Each structure stands twice: as C-alpha cells, then as structure tokens.
Length: 420
Figure 1 (cartoon, rainbow, N blue to C red):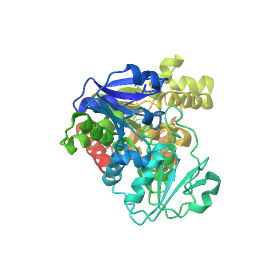
Figure 2 (figure 1 turned 30 degrees about the horizontal axis):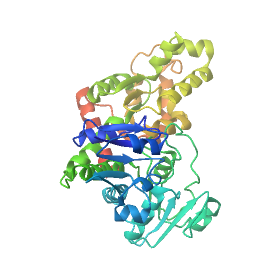
Figure 3 (figure 1 turned 180 degrees about the vertical axis):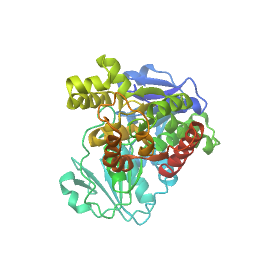
Figure 4 (figure 1 turned 180 degrees about the horizontal axis):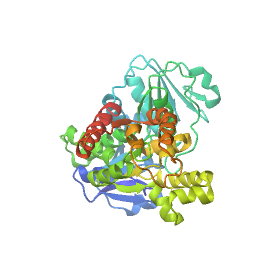
C-alpha cells in the first residue's frame, strides 16, 4: 500500500497522478500525530508533505545521500523491513528547470524562503553551477540567508525561485513578499505553488515579459521518481509523465471567453464546455437567474454600479475553481482586479468579431447599446483591454467548426509556448 502523508490533503493531486502512473489505490493519510501514525499505519512506501518532511527523519532507519544533504525527506520506502528516506523533489525541480529551459549555470539565483523546499532548491542551484545563490526570508538562520527588508541587495539577480506557500489556495490573493518591478535583470521566475496555476507572483512576472513556471511539472516528475522507488522500476516512460502533466493542465485550466456583446461568447462557451468536458458558466445568465431579472432590467432598476458589484461577487466565487468554461459579460474586461483573478486559473480567449457586423444587426435589451453607434463606441474603448488581457485571440469570421478548431490549435500552441 502506497500513499501520501500530510496534515491537510483535501486538494492533493497525488492520487490522480499516481493512478495515471499505475497505482489506482494510492491513499491520502491526514494526521496530526506523526508518532502515532508511524506506529499504526502499515505501508510499503509513502510520499511525505508539509509539515513532516523534516520531522519524519528520526523515524527512519536510513536516508539517501541527497535527502541527507538537504535534511529533508519526501519519499519513504520499506526495504527488507527498514524505512529508507529519499528526496525526489530534487529530481522534480531539476526536470522542471530542464523542461522549461531555465538555465542556472553562472546565474545569480534568489530563493524565497528557507524551509525544506528552499534547501532543495539551494543544493540544486549550486550543483547546476549557479554563480551566486541567496535565500531571502523573514527569519534568516544561515549565512546565505538575508532579511526581506534587505531586498535591495539582490535586485540585480537573474532567477527567482519561490519556495514559500504565499498565494496558495485558498489564500490566492495574499500579496507576495515583494514586487518584481525593480529586478531589471530578471530572466525567469519559478513558483513551486501550482494551485492556483498562476500565482500573483507569476502574473506579475508575465506582465513584465519574464519567463515563468509553476510547480506542477515538478510535482508530476517527483511522483514519477517516487513511483520508481516504490516499485524498484526505473523504466517508467518519461513521455508518460509528460502526458500526465499536459493532461492535468488541460483539465485544470479554465477557458475564459471575452469579447463585445454579440461576439459569440455564450455559443462558443457552450461548444467548448462540451468539447473539453468542463463546467459551463455564463456570468450574465447566472446573474439573471440569481436576481430574477434580465440584465437590462437590473441596469434600469438598480443601476450599472449595482450590476458591476454583482459581477465582482460572482467572479470571487468562481476564480479559485478549476475546469470551467466562463463566458464573461462584455464590460468585465474593464475591471483590472477581476481580470487578474480570472487569469490565476484561466486562459483568456478573446473572440474578436468585427464591430461593423454587430452594428448591422438589430440589437434589443442591451443596456449600453441603444443605437448602432453605441457598438462602435464600446468597441473603440474596450478593444485595447481585450488585447491586453488576451492569451489567445480568435477572429470571428468563419464557420463555427473552423473557429472551434482554431481555438483548439491555439490552446495547444499556448501550452507548448508557455509551459515548455
């Protein structure tokens, strides 16, 4: 029997990953008492997560070299009646850097945090030939660690690896420990958090055209290494692990449709929901259902600020959830806070329909469109925002089957471009 030991495991992806690697019986063991767990639980091997990666060491009969150097264990295997500890996070982080083509040799590397994951990242950075490796944290304990208040000492660093849980679900909106704006030489930012798929740190890095990577690939690759230790089989196909990673990305990401009124958001949200087996959310339709009024009635009776507040409250309920197709109201694009939230787990798809075509049809019950010229006004105001936030832009000038095919192709290109 194999599984994962930790304190809070409600949202762990490990069972899904290990099932794909061949173990459909992989368990989750939540425990507040490590000593009692070690006495009572019978297992052949297990992964270990927060807060037991260091605390478990005294219960082991032996520790692998890398785990011993780091002082941190995330995999335990029973061999001939003895418990041996390993650190497969080291391998997972190495494969993450390799996959995302992030080079550490002769680079200045800033590691945020000083826990077990920071120790793993530090050893790997040194072994990969980093020129300087510095940890920054609230409470430094070692010579290579500095206080967060000393951030100006490291603003010329080239690589940042965040090993802290800041921004992890459900605390997605916690502000990161510092801004990236002063880092003029920054080449890449790695955040070991993978829920949400893009933390506020990664979104800021993207906005500055800095390469980013989250911790999902590391999670899959460390699971592959752990599975090989569990089964004493070093021949698990690397392509299988890469496929598991890609499938997780495709499954977890929300597809968020933006565009002018009557650009086709509701129609294509429905089609994409069926195509990718994701839950369909139409924000305007949901607000109408919950308020018992049409959108134009809400505008007439309650005013636009009231409606925009309803949109904000709805997005607050949605953006932390995965596997959705979300059709947004046309004006939501003007709210920077909402768009940043939707980007955390979402790919923004801009349905770019020529506004002259929208002007040519009869439009009823649209609160901000009373005459054709209002369409042009909205288009000229909103188009720069659609383009700013869009990850994918689709020209709406073909048949629906051709448009769906292009969206699918551009999604594949997006993943290949962003995450490899």
